[in-house]
Image (cartoon, rainbow, N blue to C red; front, side, top):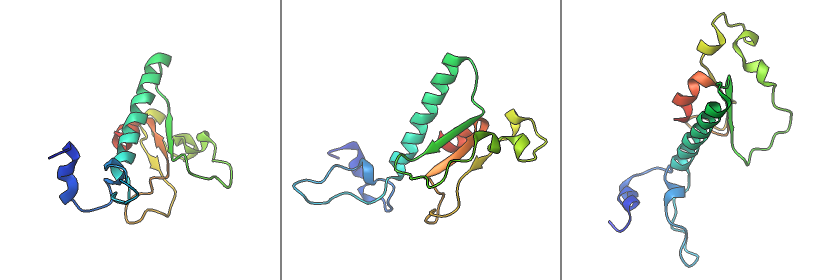
Length: 127
């Protein structure tokens, strides 16, 4: 193949749109969707979180992943709202893994626009 990703032309779905070449001479030759790029962005975000944790010498309790084009009409709930003791959990905070995503706009999958993630669940969700 001319490019390594050209073998993916036979695959169906909208997950590869952002990885294909840009339009040539005004002809749109890209698929819609960006699932692969969103997954890669989550992995890079996780790597940056891990790097920062190493520098500060401590793990974060929560990781918040949100799209830059998301418009908030109300203030985001405080981070403390998502911690186990606020949710009535009896488990220790470092062992109470969870992922909170808003309802709706999941288009048959998982809403990828915003997530509040316990640090223990971050590798699963973002990695």
